[in-house]
Image: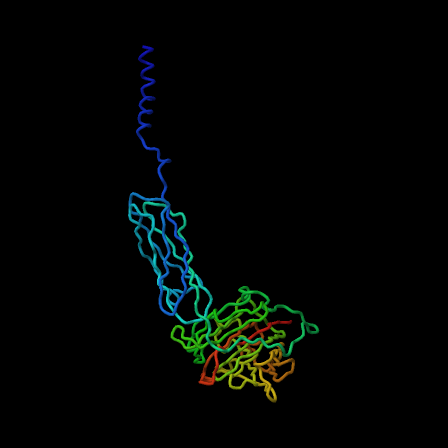
Length: 400
């Protein structure tokens, strides 16, 4: 009996050992993974192909199939490249690589290098090691205009402080890029050319900082998205908003027929109240064919109609607002708004004379900097207009 009992005990052990020897060891099976490699291509005037490599860590005995799509970054789908919502790639059995081609749209614009991503998903017969590839479009265009960027080395400078006022916010542009905590960019053509039949397409790429000291907004004559001109429009909406105080902006202005630079403000309730009920304060507007004259204006609603008041400052002799820096200011109080150039008042409006229902100037406002091209007021560029034209801003300061 003891012998039989021993055999019965050993039998399952022997059977388990035999079965174990026959079964494959899954941990020793090769693991095949997929990776997408980053890629770059130099943009040309005509369309080109950007090619990136999808590779396997080793040969597979079966086809490896996956899908991919594109994701916009600083490069915009439909403007800089042809986007892909979902496409399929097969890496045949016995091979380790396959090429993904993306069409890059050519243009003649002078712009920064731009990027987008290619993403892999829905993979079969392999795992994903690196399913994201960064694709860079390297700009090969340079602005061919002979209008060299010249920073004026003279002009008026406002004081760093005022009696009984504190500096509550400023941007001295002492950094490499525009401060995203203070500024946003509005892009496109707006509604009806931003309500004024303007001719430009606003793009972030037309704004840059020089020597970590000066902000430049550049209007260019170049074809883009069906428009003949590009420029920039930047705002502090939802980031820096102010009610009352002194605002100083030191800037050198562009010139030329059809050029329309502006330093201005809209009421922070613009999205809900609409214009002109929200109020508009034009700290400075210039018509490019009158480079020695600037305007300061208020816009508001009066009995359901648009009302406004305007004053202007004209420089004497051969002086203009292009060759030197000038400081454009408002001194905004609860009962009045004063307009100044180089600390000299040229306009004043007693806002306390408006009824509570009409007066939008007792609420917060946000700042706007832009250079428009064309429109109902300035007219449009002609053969005398040289491009590019630039508004160069040294600083923006708010005291309260």
